[in-house]
Length: 423
Image 1 (cartoon, one colour):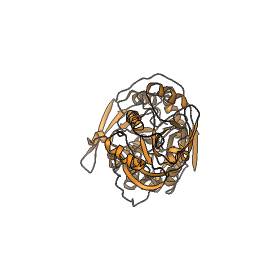
Image 2 (cartoon, helix red, strand yellow):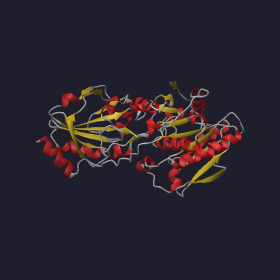
Image 3 (cartoon, one colour):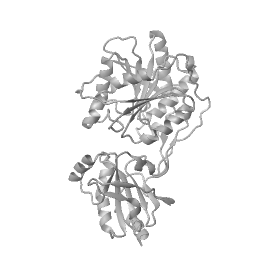
Image 4 (cartoon, one colour):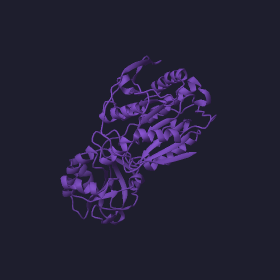
């Protein structure tokens, strides 16, 4: 069963809070996990303990303000940063490689405390840490064998989960890690409508339901991933962020597990190492570039197929992405290096409004068309998983090369490659 909710917020100013205590949990590996404790402002017996597994944003004012809001609603709050506990560098692959042992230890301790206090607990994660939360939850279920598979765990909440292995190069379809289909939990997914993986949500849900997870989906309109954790949020992001505590309370009620519902995680999990992406301009298997028609900021429609006969640099980007902005000058210089009848740059902006892009173009010089992929469908058809991502398309409309990061586009080797294709 799937349950959908939509939410729009209002504005309130920031406040902050500090942990009142912390404790360490030893692991079989010899490491320890530090749990920071933020007690509720007042005791409310029906409120579950919230356990938030963070990814480096614990010290940010918006997150501290969120904790304060939740404390004021009567929630005890634990904050756990596994990478910090393990003294591991914060990289996407390091997050993806965590086995979940630390999560399992925290959930075991929370379960023991819940039994003593007669309270439930709710593990929470964001982004890539959601992958680790699923792994750790399964380990805890198999090791502790809680009643009905979850004991006093009320549900798992994950904001804009990224549970995909990163493709080796741009244009490859991202694949789900095996833990997703091995998970059996009551799980709530909070998905922003402007999020990178919006169109992948059905794939995530279908995989979770293979092992009979109960999935509740909360949709947050007009915001991107990380909307309530940004240092410089837009007005809409700040408004929606202020209402996360209220929305969370709604979702916890909506995702209530029916009495005697049993959850059974898969016993044997297929192991999969996180893929290391190839950087720079790399060859890809020839295939026809998916056609599309989008409009630019002036409302002019441009169809990719109409560009046949030219070599095309197709660039996917966003104005909020610093590497995307950094590579624009070199793209401008590249465009000047070749005959416009034989080579053209076409850029596709990811889910930003014409007004946002118009304002951006007043401050940054862009010498090529900027098309607006307002719903993200075109980006999804090209399997875009990171920004910027670019493709070199030959004069016959075949994709030949891809780049999944920013590069200096007017470097000699890049110009030499393009020159050979144009001739």
